[in-house]
Amino acid sequence: MNAGDRAPIAERLSLRRRSTGRLSSWLDTRTQFRHRIPIRGRIALFGAAVVAVTVIIFSVVVYAVVERSLVSQQDATLAHRGEAAWTAIIRSGGHLAPLRQFLPADLNTSPELFIQLFESNGASLYSSGKVGGIDPQYPSSLLSAVPFDRGVLETTQPENGPLMRVYVRSVGPNGYVLVGQPLFGIQTLLNDLRLFLLAGVFLSLLGAGAASWFVAGRALRPLDAMASTAEDIGETQDLSRRLPVGSTNDEVGRLQRSFNQMLRQLEDAYLRLRSALIAQRRFVADASHELRTPLTTIRGNVGLLLKRDDITSEDRVAALNDIAGESERMSRMVQDLLTLARADAGYHLEKEPVDLRPIVQDVSRQAQALQPTRRIELLDGQPATVRGNADAIKQLLWILIDNAFRHTSQDGQISVTLQAGSQSAALKVSDNGPGIPKEDLERIFERFYQSDASRAGEGTGLGLAIARWIAQEHGGRISASNNPQGGAAFTVVLPAETPQTLASH
Image (cartoon, rainbow, N blue to C red; front, side):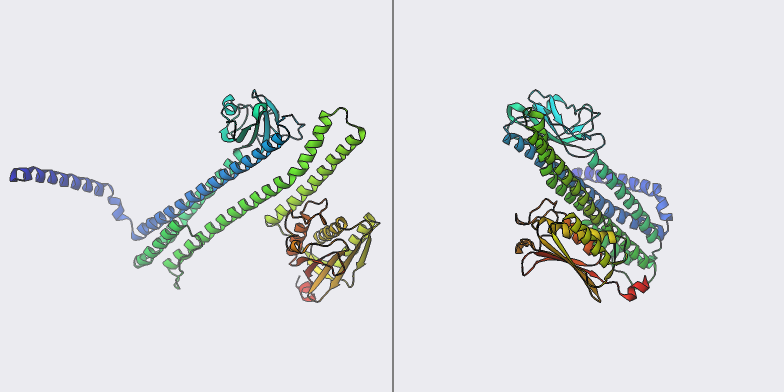
């Protein structure tokens, strides 16, 4: 390269340097105000920026995770219910028939699942969900795009209804089965979550800015350490971490405590949200699983009454009795589910000093009147006072006696024993039935769990779970065992109300 080539290059570099210098000078002029901001203001801006990045990243991640979880759960539920309905239709010979509809869901207001059957030409045959009193009307392309050998998940909007997520599967040449759910339920949850996260971001920024304002100049080094910790929390999303709290009560200490309080609130909020979602999923799964059998029985008997004109009066009465019995069973199951849902939501019973002896005597007398062929022996002993809820304790005792009724013969024997102690009171209900298998002793208090055929009854599988919650709500415990002479025994131990505690109350 000769001297003539180096000169143009130097001129170009000098031109670029002058352009860069002019741009830097222009920016300095336009942002001159920043030099007039006091150090505390700059610290406040810096702290707010760090917190904003952390909280926004966390909020975006939480929102994305919750949205994906809700959508995945909805798709899985729709696919499962759709496949179950398709399997039931195939096993019945692929015949699609309209069913009598009881209290159809209004899809404009109800976020529940619904099922809809279509003929092969796309005409709606039956729907458990209505829009303005009629079946949802979908675009013709929805059914035409369904493959023959598998079901598909689609997001569609009926001409007369809200946006829905549906699972559609072909039932051969006979038609189609569709299981759907309106999307506004999920959208409502996501909207509430967005508002919550935005409020958290706003409050976090205010707290960080106000706390950072009080930091002195020589506290810049501790601020840098706190910013690094905040960035780590944002990257790892470990909300259980906390900033180290100094021993001094200066601006740095106040900022540390404010930031830790914010993290605790965010962690508590996330844990409450996760607990609510877990409880909701468990409630929906339990209810849908256990209500399927009585609903199937009711639908089958209704279909029999509708399709058969030559049915005898005895068969008609039997079918109606089956419908009434299953309806009553569903009512009990829903009531029990509501009780357990209240327990999951943190509901606590109101308690006061209660004498167990009159409760045991009343329940035993009423039970003997209901089952005169059985022998109910009462060994009530001395009065036993506990701090509890009389109605709940009576419900617990009825659950245990009703359980004994179902697992003893008509001439069976049931004993109710009340033992009072200085520290606790023990309530025991024994029967002379077949007993409980050893492998079921630990699981018998689980929801919807029923033992083998020797102890299977007509219950819902929720009574003993409610009994355990009542015992735990009173600070006690319940256990199951087998009597040496045969039969099962349930023992409830509750803390006794001592004279000292009575005086304090």
